[in-house]
Picture 1 (tube, helix red, strand yellow):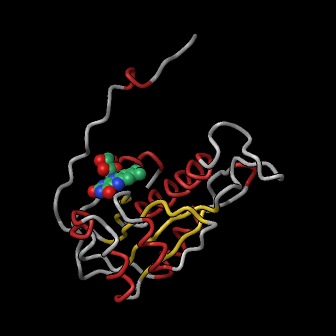
Picture 2 (cartoon, rainbow, N blue to C red):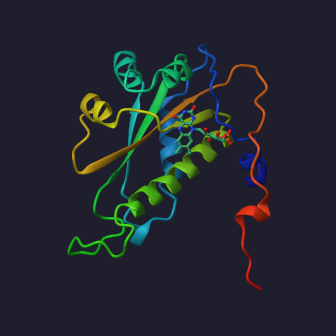
Picture 3 (cartoon, rainbow, N blue to C red):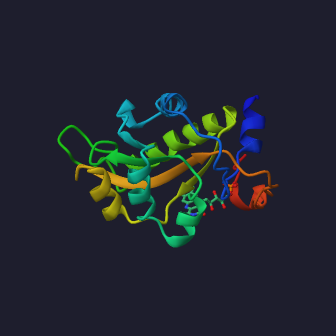
Length: 180
Ligand SMILES: Cc1cc2nc3c(=O)[nH]c(=O)nc-3n(C[C@H](O)[C@H](O)[C@H](O)COP(=O)(O)O)c2cc1C
């Protein structure tokens, strides 16, 4: 697939097949692609926790809102993404370079995660990013240190044979201002 096809084909999937599993090797490949994203001064503060273990998976899913627990009921792999705080967007003395502070860490992680989910599409793996989750609970069950901010859960799998319509996008000219 070329890049345009990957971008066009990616959809947030909410119904997965339970009979086809994402492998650890595939997840490593996704994280490798995520690592190629740009980041503030190449600070690379994104961190990933990949869950395959069935008991751990239950603990992690329990930290999602009910609708997201239903979404993930048939997935065998989820990734919890975090970033190391106070680095991206900060100087060596630990001071924020501007008003966004740790917003830059979140920005970098979002870029990484975009690479990750696009690579997943390229490999034929479906995904959904889940923001409705209990960060404290995830920190507890995965032993995530306080130096990291817990951000999203990304579910990975293979979609059921259903047609997923692309949610409508805003008109281009309603989000773009051009000065010429
Ligand atoms: C930061 C973020 C958080 C999201 N959280 C959830 C979520 O908790 N539950 C859910 O069903 N979808 C969630 N989504 C998926 C969006 O609803 C989805 O991306 C959007 O509707 C556009 O659909 P598309 O991804 O198929 O283009 C999230 C997406 C992003 C980027």
